[in-house]
Length: 147
Ligand code: RB5
Image (tube, rainbow, N blue to C red):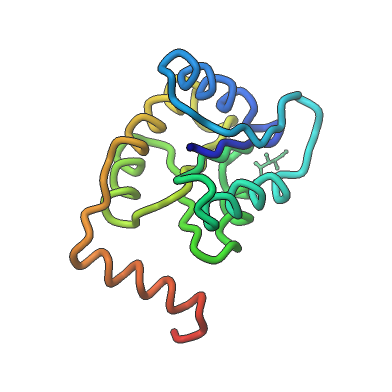
């Protein structure tokens, strides 16, 4: 299951991605928000991040105005590697090299069409492992106070 969430600044992107999921039979769990009323991004980022870190969901998509605030919130959760992406290259490489488990995007930065394109890339690109696993392990070492 894919976890998805946004604040009011990212609702346009979430709506487009959810439409793509619905049209293609892709299962997801929507953590809101679902209106344009102003809402804080940190609690929504936290809910999605905890659901991914616990294994309840396999990965996540988070959107806010820039993608940055909600990524900062998500990355506070141990085990989360949330990456802000604005183009196809970054969406591919953050899977190949960073094994990112949450894709973050900004509704005031990219179009809904681009967000759907980046989501497809993110969901369909494998982690390369090898030397990149060592680097992921070093990130975990930071979380565990070893680095
Ligand atoms: C909300 O106005 C905006 O600050 C938020 O969506 C996000 O861009 C923060 O990083």
